[in-house]
Image (cartoon, rainbow, N blue to C red; front, side, top):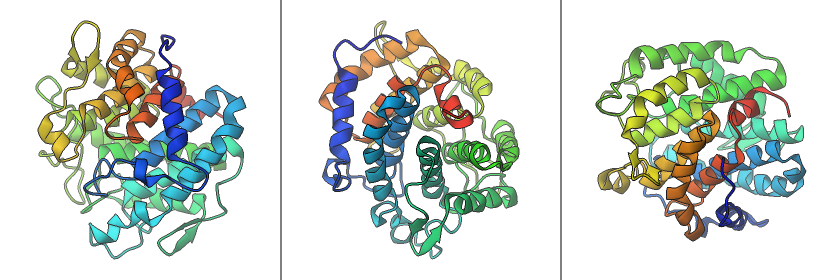
Length: 345
């Protein structure tokens, strides 16, 4: 990847440090989402910048002492009511926020804690205390895996018993991570979900988005109304950690959707999708920056960065989420996300 000459990465890291001061997350710096159940919610402004911190530690172990206080603040934000109250307030669910389903929150929380254990040899707290539950990382991971094995879709659902490709990509990561840390065999179930994706959720990327990104309730069959280039970019980047060869093939069939002016490349997202907080051009493009870094596609990475770097200096509209992805896309070396998940430091 090219060296950054305008310190856009330094500016982004300063923005991230300012978003997670020692006294707790500076919620006033966070994009104010219309719905916490949806794609710009508070949890994403914490988990994915956290993932950038873990990637930085793995690449530069000497930064661990600097990154740990940020990660501690991020964790406190993740377990706060700000991040899980939507389960009751917006979804009108009566079960606990990490008791069952709600993979969009519980799966990302589990992945974050697993990576913390990997980085520092201990969890951020002895138990995960959320919405009346007090359980260990291993108990949370086992709970999610058990739901996976019992689900008709072979994945864990988020809302209305529908399983999402992006959220289950995180579950695949956590299964591999927990196996490495604790000697379990949860990842043996990963391919069953990938079969659901291959057999039921791949659409026609020659004419539109790659994935039907959600199933219908309690079924592997697709909800054919759920397609989005933004969700494709998100899912591909995350799945590159657990199914890299397959993702490379899928991406080759999808990348014609990218817009290219000869110098810069971006993912086109419509104003309508931005308005309903499905995705934005910046957000989807940042996910492809992460994917390009993971795949080692230097030319694509550099030209995506040509699009994103000026915005990285001034700040993205959906921050600190996108700043976290921008940092992640520059901290990763080829195959770095997969190594973070599957190999000890």
